[in-house]
Image (cartoon, rainbow, N blue to C red; front, side):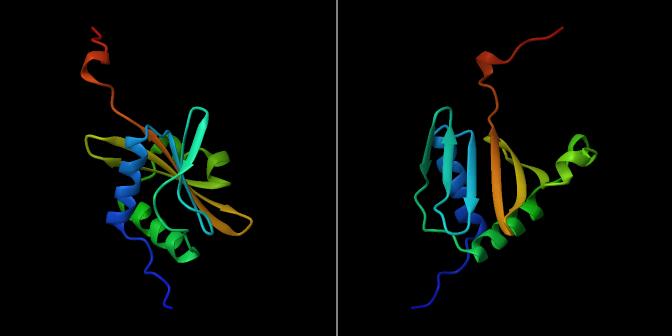
Length: 126
C-alpha cells in the first residue's frame, strides 16, 4: 500500500477552519498524531488522518510561504532560541500566530488563533 500524499494547503486551511468552527484557541500538528484542536479546558482531535513527518514538512512549507515574522517577535532572542514565530492571516476569519518548534528532533507546529472582534464588541476610541 502506498503512503498518502503529504497534506496540502487546501487541507491545512480546512483544518484551520474546522478548528475555528470548534472555537479552538490552538491547533497542534505533530508527526505520529492526529491534528489536535484545544480551547479553554478541552482538547480534541480534528477529523484527519494521523500525520507523518512528510506532512509536517509540507505544513512548514505552507506556513513559511504564507507567513511573516513580525518585528516584535523577530527581535526576541529568547523566542528565536527555541521556535520560529510566524504570523499569517485567514482574511476576515483569523490571525494565525504560528510556531515551528523542534521537540526531541521532531518538527511540531503550534498555531494560536486570534479571531476578529464582532462589530458590537469593537470599542470606539477618541
